[in-house]
Image (cartoon, rainbow, N blue to C red; front, side, top):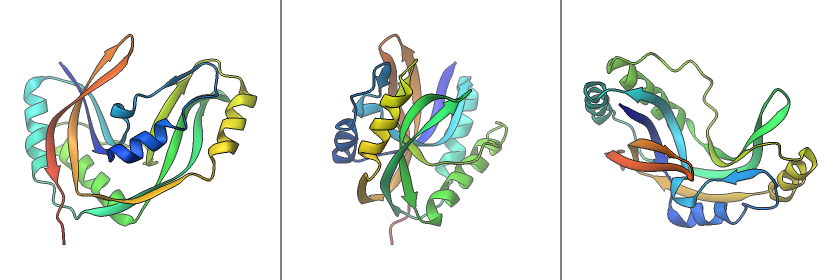
Length: 180
């Protein structure tokens, strides 16, 4: 079984700038810069034939290249406790259209549709019992973040291997976006 997701890779300078924000929150498990990405579709565990079908369907996605910017920070909460620190993503309608096409490709490969609301972001860290006041201070200190715009000219299919030290992502296939 493979644990898969479809994502946009970020340029190394952007990932390094985001890594520079990491710190100052006890209980945070910070994402390694090389794992920072924007998820278009989390697939989960699939067998090899389904992975091949997904790759074939994604290779037929036709979408234009576009620009995006990293803007601001926030956190996802569960039961009113901060769980995940993230940087926001601002882009034109091309990003949402690409996400919809990726979802349709996943459905064509035999997966169910992703009914979750698409909230583009880059995960920076996961929290375990982090003090709320430290999370609030971190968000206030980094709230004016603005990086980019950067041109996105491809998306990719990744596998994710979970380890005790954090996930290891491996790019399995890349799919170019149309330039021009």
